[in-house]
Image 1 (tube, rainbow, N blue to C red):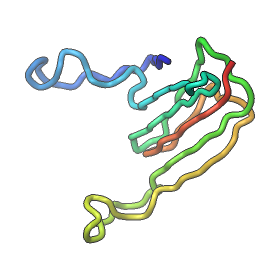
Image 2: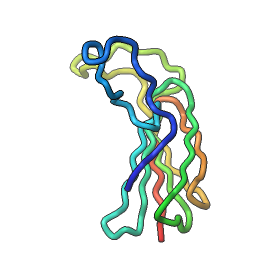
Image 3: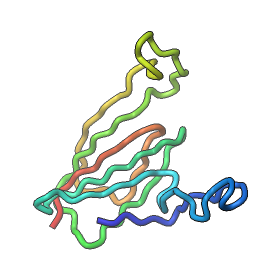
Image 4: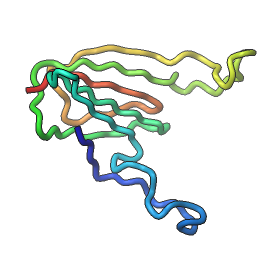
Length: 129
């Protein structure tokens, strides 16, 4: 399963081979990280979209080589909205503050365009033909 995009990571300032590499490490879905996988029986497609930024991002999903069939399930993990950083509790390492939110929902069909919230990971699962 291949993921493509038309939003490559912007080149970083600096000297090639000294400050950064000749080829940027980001993907063509920058600033989002997108991954797609077919189940072992090739009947279910899962697409994960990670938004590490502090703003909502849009993503267009064009499927090639498979056809979505039926409803899509959506699982979304989001950071607390507007919560200021909190010092971690003793023994918790770098982690602290209010917990993340997990939500599950269903869509009538696989989405063609999605808007993912800031600091989130969303997984879309649907049957394919």
